[in-house]
Image (tube, rainbow, N blue to C red; front, side):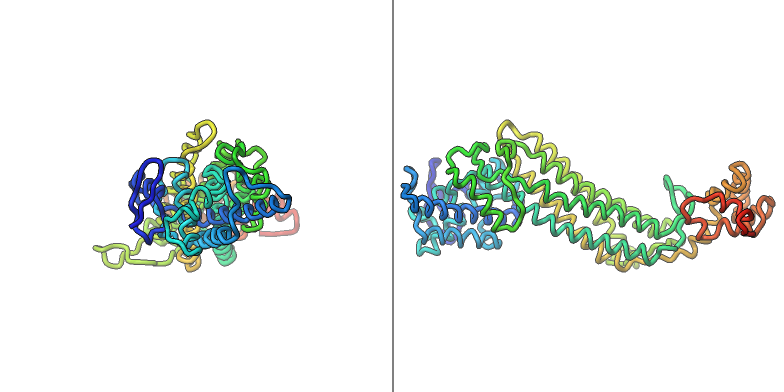
Length: 487
C-alpha cells in the first residue's frame, strides 16, 4: 500500500493502481457505476499531449532567448517531458482505462475527470522514469501533468474532439443505411402499393416512391450529420478556468491550438471569445438536435416497415428477415426485433436531447457544472445511432423483400382508386362508382361496367399502373382523341 495526501487528509492506495487520491475521493463521492466514455478519455490524452509538446517549445524558446523560468516553476528536463508525452499517447490509445475509476455521472464540472487522467499520466510517467506510482516528488499530477491547464478548457475541448471523431463514424453508418434503402428503391421501383393516410387506404403509390422517400430523408440526415464538425470545431483551449487565460503563458494560448490541430488532423479553431465558449454550450445543443432529427427518421422508417410486415395485413407484401425466436411460449413466433430496437434507440436519443438542452440551460454564470452528463449523453446518442444504423442495414434492409401481387389486386377494390377517375368524369360520378364498390364489394371495373359510366377501354387505360403512378395528368391525357390517340 502507498499513502497519498491532499489538503483534506490522507488515503491508502494499493501500489499497482495508477489512479490517486483525487480519483479515489471522487469514486467515493459519486457512488454509481456509470462508465465514463472511452472516446472522451482518449481525446483527453490528445489534449494533454498537445500541452506537453507546447511546454517543450515554450521552454526551448525561452532558453534560446535567455529568459528564466517562471518564478513558481523550474524547467522540466527532457526525461520528464518525454515520459509525460509517452504517457499521454498511451491514454490517447485507450491504454490504462481500467485505472480510470471516476463514474461518468458526477459533480464538479469535470475536475474529477481531469485529475484521474492527470494521476494516470503522472504514475505512468513515474514508472517510465524508474520511480514508483505515487512518488509525486518527481512527477506531480498538478504541477507537471496539469501544467498550465484547467479542467474548464481541457475537458470540453476533449469532448469536442471525441464528438467530431464520432461524427465520421456516424456519417458512414447513415450512408450505408441510405445505400441499402436506395437498393430497395431500385429493385421495387415499379411495384404498385396501397398508400395509406391516417391508417386508412388512400390512392395507389409504388414501393419505389416509399423507399425513395426514406432515401431522401436519410440523405438529409447524412448532410446534417456532416455539419456537426463545423458546429463543434471551435474550442476554448487556452482559456483556462473562466476563458480569460489567467495564469497561462501567452505562448501556450497561441500555440496549444496549433499543436492540437497537428496531432488530431482536425480543423479545430480556438474560439474568438473563449469566455463565451467556456460558459455557453448552445453549440452542443444545436449539434445534438441533428442526432434527434436522424432518430426521428429512423423511427419513422422502422415503424412503417414493422407495420407493413405485420400480421395485421392478411397478405403483407413486405417480408422482413426473421432474426430470432419470438416467444418462450408460442412455437414458431418471430418478432420484428430490429424495428423495435431502432424505436428504442430513437427514444433514448430523444431523452438525451431533452437532458442536454436542460443541463445546458442550467449553466451558471461563467461555467456549466453539468458538462460531464451532457458529454455522456451526447456520446451515448452517437454510439446508439451508429449501432442502430449498422443493425438496421445488416439485419433488416439487406434481406427484406417485397411481393405486391395480392396488394395490387386489392387496390382495385379500394374505393379511393376512383380518385384517378375524377379528372375524366368529375367527383359526383366518381363517387357513384365508389359507393357501389363499397356496397357491392366489387372492383372499380365491375362497378363501372354496372353503372356504364366509362367505356371499358378507357377505364383500363386510366387505371393501368404506369398511369396510376405518373406525376399528375395533362389535358392530352384527358382527351387523347384530340392528339391522335384512341381508346
